[in-house]
View 1: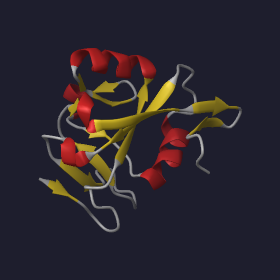
View 2: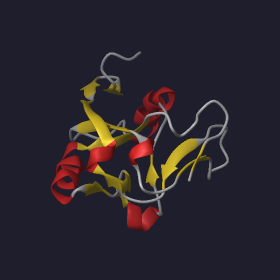
View 3: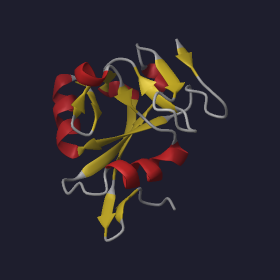
View 4: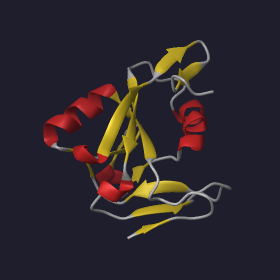
Length: 127
């Protein structure tokens, strides 16, 4: 059951910022189960994700001080076997997609290496 809100249906591609190390482990295990920086799926209850327009803000707010290599997982929610819900659990103005279970590596359609410079992390080719 995938449910959307507003202009963001959850059948469009969603994105998750991951450490390259965590992604390598996921490929070996067959699924990705990290919720967000420093938190596992088991601890949080879901995997945090973003719509494309939200990625730059997430990188700035939550990953600015990270020094290890990061990548952006591009996820096709139609390939997931668990619910994806666009919601806001913290009372802000935006809904974010939350994946309520592990992400099979075959649901990740591509992996984008993120770039880091003096201004922080960037999605190459995006403003």
